[in-house]
Length: 295
Image (cartoon, rainbow, N blue to C red):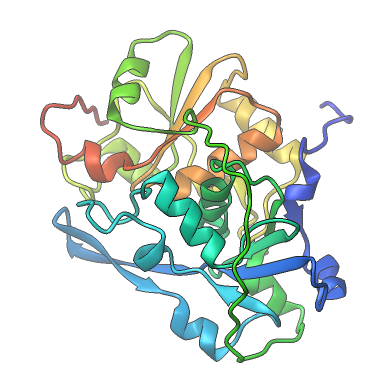
């Protein structure tokens, strides 16, 4: 084991004790970005119901936190898929309107899983604003530590930042098709094993994108604390799955949420060629023209 292993960008992860000491710091803007998925038996037409975390935010949140509504404000309302990225220009203006921009450090947290935080982290990152961190363990860890909460709804004044879009991070089905037979590419499915094997038809045709490997997103997270696993654990997990940093890696899942957690972990280990298939299996499994495999 490499004892010199460290996260490449440790500033992108903060813990609850640190945040507790920063409450009231005007240079920090804190956001609850929770969404809930309630899985149904109506797949593939309606694999899950989506519930905004706004109601729970109003009941209790970390002091000073505002709310970001992924489904209703930060997803393309014209898309047939739930969480498609909006136009980058629209996305940037929406973030600015909610107070994201210089000189603030943006802290993101969510409930029942950090994948909602990593989704927003990448959505901001792709626009070129880098002063963004996720709260390790999220609101669940904050509550476990009996740290203060409040109910006052917060809205920040608008902010500005220079938009510098990285067009390589989020990709569509054409890039994924090209990666299937590319020996220098690797597709990673962040969904659970039953979905990967085709035992669950949640998104339409059961199965996975051909030649992809399966590293479920929850394997990067400690199941008790909701925190990202240690750098050594993540390194070992990737080694066990023969994930080569020289490859171009495309992560996918059901709707572009869980895959952002896998991608965040790879980014922290300084993988350079990492991408996210935005519409993921919500699109792929419903398109009979696209190849699929199971078993």
